[in-house]
Amino acid sequence: MDRSNKPSAIGVSASIPQPSVSLRDNIVEATLPSGESVTIYLYGATVTSWKLANGKEQLFVSETASLDGSKPIRGGIPVVFPVFGPPPKDHATSSLPQHGFARNSTWEFLGKSSSESLGKDRTGDNSVKLDFGLSRPMLTEEFQKAWAYDFGLVYSVTLTKESLETSLQVQNKGSQNFDFQVLMHTYFKIDDIADIRVKSLESKTYVDKTQNAAVITETSPAIEINKETDRVYQSLDPKVPIIVSSATDDKPIFSITREGLNDVVVWNPWIEKAKGMADFSPDEAFKNMICVEAGSVVGWQTLEAGDFWEGGQTIRPRL
Ligand code: BG6
Image (tube, rainbow, N blue to C red; front, side, top):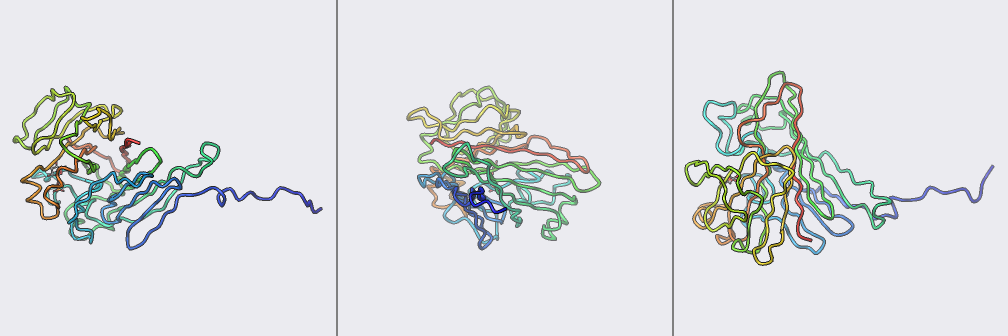
């Protein structure tokens, strides 16, 4: 029987605004209906832009960053794996470059998923998750020779109206255990380094890379950056947000919570180092960036054959 007034399929997804996602020239761009956006290069799965609805950029990228895949991108959020810093001698990572191979390998875009926001937010779907993959066969021959293990990485970048989340899943696909370190090397864009204070690190131990790796206990509740700074804070509680705040109004500019990432690196190259980096420009831009890098870089994570590890960060900006 034909029911003339039978309910028709409601075109929910057609009528509710959805995030837009595009992949062009190895660059993924996503925009939420409310205007926030994110850009990720497949080279390094490097997030190079994160804008709020008002168009304000949250990440610093050097004007002379190489974007052609010839070297890691100087800015945004490079992914450091499987070694942080210069690899130690006589270690399985010894033949790799500084910070490993993830930031200088070309990842694949695995696809997007968006939140089921119906009922919660009728103005549209309010988040989008973008997944990227890297596995051993995708590495250059040089990197395959330099690191012997079979692995799979899935890196997820989730954009919401209130946050950017980046998380990494590491899988050991081989038959031998491997050790790794991991870090999300976030370059935050700031107006003026003189106004920045980094909080939640008081009484924590750090290794000061500018002082021959001296081990120091932090005494400041609000760290000022007024010289070259390269510190590895360790054994933090990932649930306690690291706060990058403004001295002017004492309010957070960014908060960073972590999962599985118990160390945090605070880095600013300052005047001389900034001048010395060919891909860092303009020279004065050290005033407009601070790296607060969530990682697991003190000691090693050992991943047994067949096992998975996962860690990530959630960054909330001042809205
Ligand atoms: C930081 C390190 O994470 O990265 C610094 O602690 C290093 O020592 C900085 O200088 C930048 O590294 P790179 O390899 O991108 O120049």
